Amino acid sequence: MSESATTREQICLMAKSMFDRGLTHGSTGNLSVRLSDGTLLVTPTGSSMGFLDPARISHLSVQGELLSGDRPTKEIPLHTAFYETRHSAGAVVHLHSCHSVALSLLPEIDPDNVLPPLTAYGIMQLGKVKLLPFFVPGDPAMGDAVRGLAGRRSAVLLANHGPVVAGRDLAAAVHAMEELEATARLALLLRGTAATALNPDQIARIVERYDVDWI
Image 1 (spheres, rainbow, N blue to C red):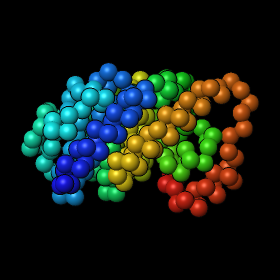
Image 2 (image 1 turned 90 degrees about the horizontal axis):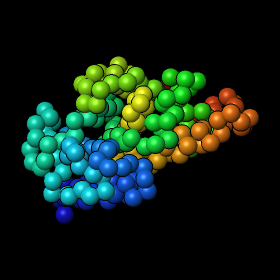
Image 3 (image 1 turned 180 degrees about the vertical axis):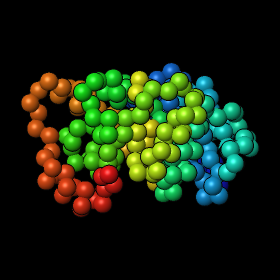
C-alpha cells in the first residue's frame, strides 16, 4: 500500500476515534498530515470526522493547490503555518473540544500558558500552550498569529474556538491533543479548590529530563 493510501486510512481511523469519544462533534474539527514529498493530506471542508471517506481526503501540493479529493477545510491557514514554522511537524490536529474551549473563556487563565501544571504528561507532551485571540473561522490571520510564535509552541488555544496541536506524526499530534483536553478538564474540575499543582522545581526536572520546549 502506498504512503498516501496508508495515511488516508490512518486519518480516518484516528478521526473516528476522537469523534466516537466526543472529542469533536458534528462537522467540527480537522486534521492534516505532511507526506514525505511535502504535500499534505487534509480533511475536507464540512466533513464529519466520524464519517470520513479515505478517497475524498483533500490532497494539496506544496504550493497549496488541490491535487485530488474534496475541497480542504477552511482552517488550512492554521495547518500550513505550523508546517512552515515547525519543521519537525508531520501532522496538525484542530478540534473544538468542549473542555479546552471552556478553559479559553475563563478570565483568570494565563494567556502565555493556559494549562496549569497539573500532571507531568501535560508538560511533556505539550510544553506551554499559548492562548491566541478570537478570529472568525477561516480568517488567514489565524495563520499569521501562529507564524508570529516563530515555531516556539507546538500547541495553541484559539479563544472561543478550540485547540490546535502539531506533532511529529499523526499519532503524536492526536495523543498530545487528547492530553490537552484531559488537562483542561482537570483544570475545570479543580477550579476553586486548593489543588496541589506541580511546583517550579518539579516542572524544571520534567523539562530537563524530557527536553521540553518551555519558552
